Image 1 (cartoon, rainbow over the protein chains, first blue to last red):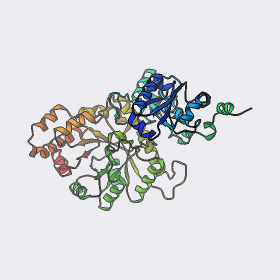
Image 2: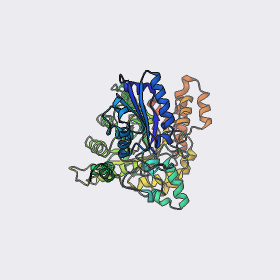
Image 3: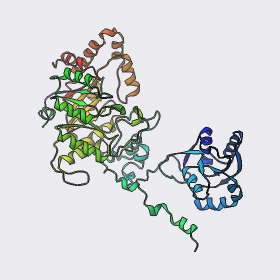
Length: 224
Length: 292
């Protein structure tokens, strides 16, 4: 799930500026689960805008704004309201805002801030996170990712800020390498802790252009 | 070969000191601090953006020490530089006559004064040690040959006070395998911590220098206990400071420091004194310890 938080209404109003007629698009995916979006939040936001003399010309909820083809299809059913709008306010992650902006010829503004979750993590994952580094080291770290659990993404063991199992960065945050140490100890594989990991190839974090435009999107967009 | 390397490799007991570069370009205090260390220590650590608080650079101040006739231990952290910059700093250091380099991961940027800074950590303390040894062999991380080969003496740090101790021991072993030739510890105030740790690493035969941060007052001791991982100032030392009138705190600090040195010197191969500005009492610390 992509993690989001609500922007202050003052900031949203600042972004809308003089634009009076606003259409609101809400994502019924991650933000609803995270309680930063969904129908109730969209209705509340509409009320807040009306209280500030904005004219909310329409609202719609779309499941998964990250699905650009679906966004296009669903927004085409609201063409009249969209045409009447000066601006579109999007209650979703940054992906949804961009997908919406790609579909309508109106300024689109985010109502939420997207907090990094180190890349998309599936629709409903638990606390495990993948750093999507392209060089998985999980086999020697007890199946716990050091890149996402360690605040410094260290590959070679805990730093001098790890004490009694917690990280120096935040109280109560577990030190990733302490978790790895405990797991390896339980597995009887502490020798793995001593393996010196090769330095990372950060080129692998750069997503190639051809992977950004997915095959599925091409299938949906092209007229065959 | 640096004097630090000569002394440590000859098996002699070594004392090192430390200066922290100022936040700004006024180095009068730094000069003053250095004067007090003259002839008292073998080498002087120059901290690198310590505690992630922006200040004058470690490399340039280390070079300043060389020019003034002191032997620096150039501290280098991985927090602020990628592998290009780290290697550049290392060969630059070698070029200006710096030989000792202490390889650290670095405190996280949120502990410092620019909390929104991007932490780099492209390398870590272990891979930085490997990098120093690679450069010493005439190659860089991309496998290219160097034109002129540095001869750096790489060291590392360890914090024996961190709990649990086992991962610290494992990381110590890893640093030795990566080429660490000496260690300086995080501040210690309980000789038993050093004793217990040394038992675990003695067989590796790498010189360890016990770190001591000179206590300035009760507030500082309590602050370290609350905020610095692995540093523990025992109650009896805090009480000793609390019972001392303000005017006599420096003398008391030297006395406590000297006592700690005395207690720990038989367990390791050196002492690393971190006076945090109070270099003027370093001679007294050493006198109390019987090392003057």
